[in-house]
Length: 542
Image 1: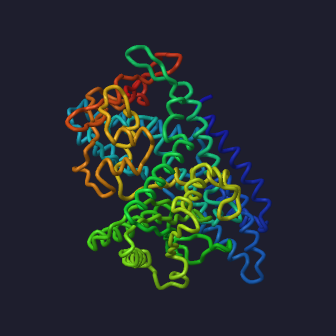
Image 2 (image 1 turned 90 degrees about the horizontal axis):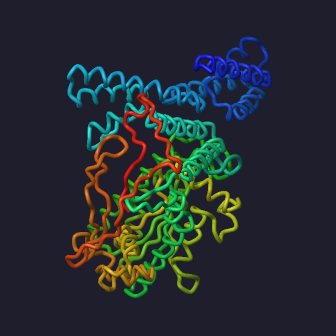
C-alpha cells in the first residue's frame, strides 16, 4: 500500500477517534467542541481519556469552571506542540520520517562530495539537518563515521524513537499521571512501549549467532544470558562486591553509614500524598539525576581536600513520581565519621536547603549497627528491588516488588540513569577479566587470580594493593588492541579489550575472531540510503 494512502487512512482514523471522544467532554457547544478537537490532535491516544476527565472536573467547578477547563486544555495543547517531536506519530510514521531524513542527508552528502567539498563541510551541513529535527550532533572520532550514521535510516529511527519516548514521558509528568495512585515510576504507555521493544530485541537476538574462524557457533541470546545483562548475574555480582567491601571494612577498622539524599521539592511533580505539587518546575528525572551527581561531585572534592578515607556503593531509585533519590552505603574511619556526614549534608542541602521539611527529608543518616544486621543487609533490598525483586515481597509503596522492579528498570533505561555505582576500590573491568582468566594454564598462580576464581572481592582488593590504590600503581592492568577493520558505519572498530597484563606478562582472554551473522544467512542487499553505513556482519574479539 502506498505511503500516501496509509497516511490518509491514519488521518481519517485519528479524526474519527477524536470526534468520538470529544462527545464525552462536558462542553457540548460547537465552538468549544472545535477547540477540544483541535487540542486532542496534539495529545497521544493513551492520555486522552485522562485529560478528558481532568477537563470535565475543572468544568464543573462552581466558579469560572469553563474558563479553568479551557485554559488547562489550551496550555496542555501548547505544551504538546512545543515538544521537540510530534508525540502522536506511530511506529510506521516514525519510520517514514526516519527514511526521509536519511534520504535527505544522503542526497546532501552525495552532492557535496561529488562537487569536491571537504568532509568537514559535509558534516557541518548534515549537523544543521539534525538541529532542525531537535537532535544533538554526534561528535565521533571519525568524520566518515558520523556522515555514515546521518545517512542511515536505522540510526535516524533509533534517535527519533528515543526522542519521542522521552517527550511522551515529559507529558506524563506534566499532567501528573506518574504517581503511586495512578502509574507508578513510569507511565503505562512508556512501560508498554519499552517492554515491547525489548521483546523485539530478544526475538532479533535469537535470530543471530556468532561464528569464529574455526567454525564454532554460539547463539547471541545465550551470550547475553551469560553476561551482567542477565538480572540474576547482575545481582549476584553486585552482592559479591558489596560483601567484599564489608569484609574489607571490618578487617581494617572502618565503620559504615547508610545515607539517603533526596532532590529539592520543586523537582517532584507529585506529593507523597498523591496531590499535584504546585511548586514543580518541570525538572525531568534526568535533570534531577544530573543535579544529584553535581552535588555529589562537590562533596567528593571537599572530602578529598579533607583527606577523608572512605569508599562504598551508591544506588539510585525513583520516588513514586519518577524523581530519583540516592542511597549510599559509605565506609569510613570512626574518627572521620562526623566530618564526612557534615560535609555530605552541606552539599545535599546546598540548594533550597531552607525550604520546609528539608532538614528532615532531604538528607538522612542511619548508622550501621552490627547488632541489628550487616551493612550489606541494609542495602541488599534496594539492589534487589531495583533489578528483579528477588527476595522482596513489596516495594516502599506496597506494590509487588517483582512488578515494580520491571518498571524501575524501564525507568532507568528511558532516562539513561545509572542505577548502581561503586566509589573506591579497583575497577570492576579488571575483576571481570581476571575471572575469565582465573587458573587457566597460561596464568601464573597469584593471589589476584585466586581471589578472582573464588569470587572474593575483599581478597581481590588486597591483592591489588588496597581500596585506595591508584590506577597507575595497580599490579594488573587492562590490555587493549586497536582494530583497524571497519565496523558497521565504515570506521575502525577501535580499541577492544584483549586481556590483562601482570608482572610484565600479557595474558589473553580473547583468542578468537568472531563474526555476528543471521542464523540463516541471506545476503540480500538493498541499494538505498538506509544501508549506506551498515554491513551484514560485524566483527568482535572474544
